[in-house]
Amino acid sequence: MAAPDDSRVPRRPGLLGRQFRRVSGPIKESRGLPRVVLWIGTAITGMWVLVAIFAPWIAPYGYAQYQTAAGERFPKHLPPNMDHLLGTTVQSTDVFSRIIWGARTEVEVVILAVLFSLAIGLPVGLISGFKGGWLDRVLVLIMDALFAFPYLLLAIVIAFLLSDVLASGVLTAAIAISVVYVPQYFRVVRNHTISVREEPFVEAARAMGARPRWIVTKYVFANVVQSVPVVATLNAADSILTLAGLGFLGYGIQPTQGAEWGYDLQRAIADAGAGIWWTGLFPGIAIVSLVTGLTLLGEGLNDVLNPLLRPRRTEPVKFPDKQDDGAETGRTQPEQRGKS
Image 1 (cartoon, rainbow, N blue to C red):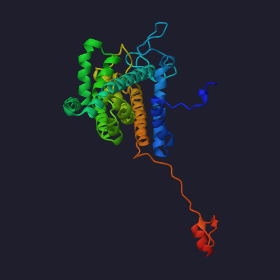
Image 2: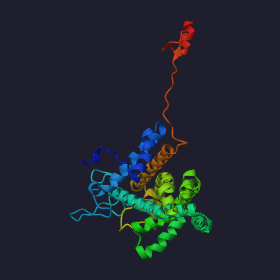
Image 3: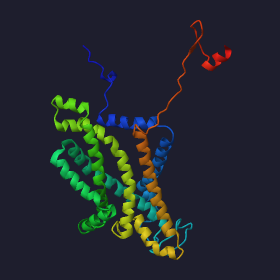
Image 4: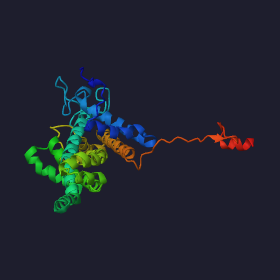
């Protein structure tokens, strides 16, 4: 007896495939302004991500390079020209190269900060919302205490405490920023978990004898994780400003470890009074551009994925009219009245 042909049997998509279809479906069906906002934010953010990936090939010089290969030092405060497209700084570094290398630093810190925040806030919020009781009260108290601190002050304290252990690098900045945003992920996930755990399908799973771990991973997580991409995108935009604030105050990335736009703005304060505008203008434009792109991306995702805000495509419904003898005609109701 021949074995059945498995190639004709449709395979069910896995968990990741189902989640991807659940997220991509509303994006494909989106219409109007939310779709435009989403794609504009995606284009701006994608542009900076590509710049960060190909920074070694785009930047003409290194982020701390101040002289040519022949040993000649770049002029200080040189205006934009053909050799230095965006001019030079007081340290004789190329502004364009520092912006390109700074994009890589910003993207690295944002990705690490979002991953660290998700790795802590998502499981802790799930456990707190599903278990409840004294554990939930303790975790809520801790997260509210962290949330009560000003986010920039908390990031400065964490960066200062870790500077002696990890030095002031990308990892230190990412950890300092992630501590700030863990309470936000915790709140969103916990509140959503509390509402999902009372749904009938969760009660049915309990009645069938399913273990709590299976219920959380199989049913609760799939419904809670839908709100995470929007929060992660908006927090990524906010983390750019936090990193720029740390660099502006001197607690971010050190100039010998990487280029950072907030540090460049701090060094450009003295230049602004002397009429040297290019050292501070272009890093500021880079910060505003990336923050705007991430914000538009987050707002677009919120409008598209939220069923209460998502606009749906509607088509007019035409009902066929009938003549006196009961036969259907293609005329509209006003035309029939005019004929009669």
